[in-house]
Length: 427
Image (cartoon, rainbow, N blue to C red):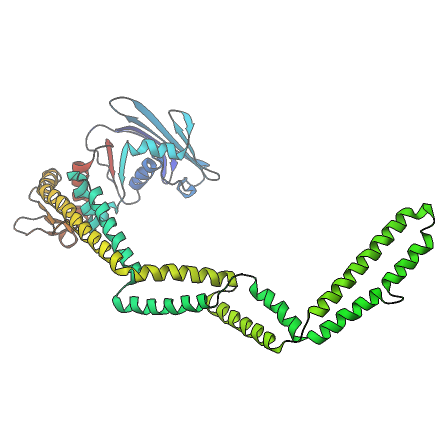
């Protein structure tokens, strides 16, 4: 429990030393007297967010210290918040991180601000409170729901309804056939066809250009002849042996290139039919890229993926039968898990209501009646009902509870559920 609290320069508080006894302690005062700053101080001690705006005007820093005593030990937590710079934390006089303060605080203090009780109005919060009270294992229910969701997603992915599946199969068959009939062998085929079209489209000019180039190298007074004359001029001089060797290599390369150009020129033929075939093939590849990908590699990959998807859809009946069987088993498993959870919740609901009601007796609600309603399996629809006055039927908290009644109901619930912090703080 929190036994001592020391505050310096926090908000309106210049200096405060507070010794706290056991049991219920109520601090009262006028609006603006600093009650909320006490809660702020405790929040800082247990790792709450530090804001320089809480430092008292004209001071350099705010300081909060708290002594917590348990059956086994005693711990002193401290937090210093400067006007500039990061806050500092201490545990038993030694520097610590804010995360370490929060770790200590989780086991020492349960803090509720002015509007914390509003969370009790939500169905999910009420269901969570009931589950915490009865200790039901929700893991089988979660796993069963996840398994059913997974199977239904697989069924949806498999092909949807029959009409949608038939439409997709028809489309995939057309696409796979179109790509397969194109007989794409190489992702670089379009570049190769471009070169072939260039040669075939201007065959005569290409051939004449190659012959002219070869003649310039090997005819009389051509490049090869000129290099030969250079060799003859210096070949008898030993000093230039290396140069002669290089010139001979150049002449051999010139002759080799000239022969290759003549061979290529002789292989070039005018073939209008071949040219038309190449152009049609290029047009087909352009059309495929327009439909299925930026490159032939993407077109080939698209065809492969579409083929796999088509096989999957065409094998739908067998796969669907298997998944339907799995789905039936998953539903049965889910219903069983829902029954277990629903029975546990319904069995614990009156016990929780009675326990909360008993605590309300000590909180000036002597005639309060509490009921916890649980819906059909798995009992997810949980509602806390309250009749604060004699003769009134129990109704949902949202309809009958005032702010004070809600706060006391939250306190009573926390007293029933708490298993850890020995200090409960309500603002």
